[in-house]
Length: 95
Image 1: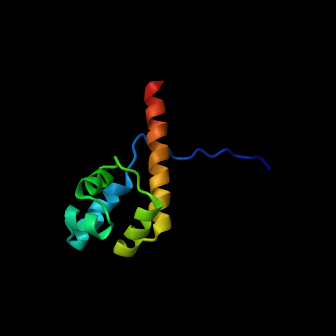
Image 2: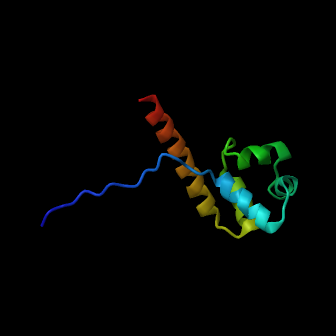
């Protein structure tokens, strides 16, 4: 029996959890200000979160789980994948 190496898919792009959150709050009819209030952030911080500029912490993930019904583990995993992808993509640009 031979072992076949599989390549993992590594796109040359990434999507922040904030992009998904932006879609979700639009579905829910929430403004950025309402989101900020519900997850205990300042509106400017909520905007940074939506833009992928502010890391999504475990506390924020817990608040988002309560707000959206999407498990905090999903938010945390997405954040980690996003940050890893940002590092991978910036390293690829440096080559």
